[in-house]
Amino acid sequence: MTQPTAIENNAAVTKNGKRADTRLSLILAAERIFSEEGISNTSLRRITQAAGQRNESAIHYHFGSREGVVQAILDLRTTPINAARIALVEEMRAAAGGAPLGSRDIARLLVIPLANYLRSSAGKSHYLRFLSMLWIDRPIWRKFEGRTQDAGLRMMREALIEAKPHIPAVVMRQRFAMAMQMGSSILARMERLAFDRSETYDWYKTEAQIADLIDSIAAVFDASLSPETVRALRQCGEL
Image (spheres, rainbow, N blue to C red):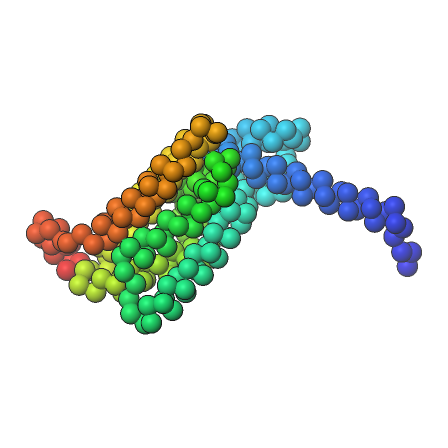
């Protein structure tokens, strides 16, 4: 069999490099467009144009579908964030020595990995806004719910249920969902302001807002059940 020449090898490397560059440019364009215009409502052609690609079938070639584009964004951004969150859960569990985690610990687990991403991106990303849009678009969200990227969140939700045995699990799952929505929306707003204001953005104020966000989520977790909620839970058979 004839072996490929050095020129052919270099050509293959160049071709693969261009393919990877094209794929990344499409991912970043999709992340930006989805964050601004929504996910289900955005045409794939709009993403192709935003990425500067003349070939209108580029999305289908690289990702296969709209869901494939969303998965690629999650692979790029959410996968490392999930890994960081799992590491934090394990670290806090070890420090607790077998005792349940506190509400503020769990709130920190929810917020800190995303806040760290906000800091590291210096306001030049659209990921947090994309994540907020994904949460709103429930038909799309459900297609990705429960996948590998959610492992850290599932660990946190179970830790929250364990920490609140006196409150029905259905209530704590709902509170966890509310906390996710609140956290993603507020951090997305911070990302928007950091992006728009650039050099004039007040990062010191952001740190205070992040700390208060953690406090607020912990308060949601700690809220007692009102008589009205107890009655409603009994009526629907959850208590």
